[in-house]
Image 1 (cartoon, rainbow, N blue to C red):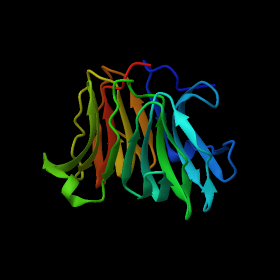
Image 2: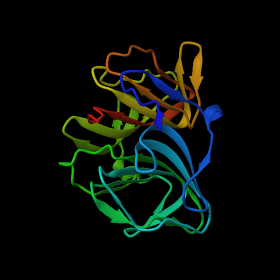
Image 3: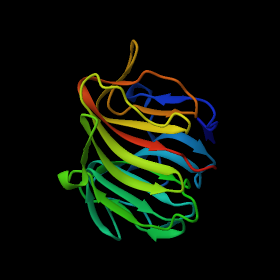
Length: 217
């Protein structure tokens, strides 16, 4: 399976494009954002766990990155409510589940084998945020040129990032605007290095997950 597989091309998915597909485990469905491979794939997706869903214990070659969007996601390390950011390094194992149900943003097989740090960050904790350029940033992870953070921007502010690198954006709250186009919460964008845009926060401001310096695949 190949979905938005060419990292040299822009890829944009909005909530109107969502098409949920069943996973091999009952109660777990996925919206694939990008994918190279079959069930054991390099992939980015939004995953929904129905209440009571349990996924068998499994390993993660190439690592796993998770942002909990709603509900509570659980695994061997505990219960992780909405706003939790997790990183499981390459070849780590866990048995995920959700008693009440959850929706998570997941990236699989996209970590450097040298990136061995486990990460657990509560992005709802004000202590994890710092003021910057009239907005705020919650730094999540940095390794070998890869940077991951949440950004909050006030209405109308331009979204600044390093355009010399591939960038990935998931809109969490508000809208991202580019001229006459608007990308609402739930939209995912992956833009190649050198892509020129005029992104700014919408009228109600913006909170977004932003990754730059995507590792080579």
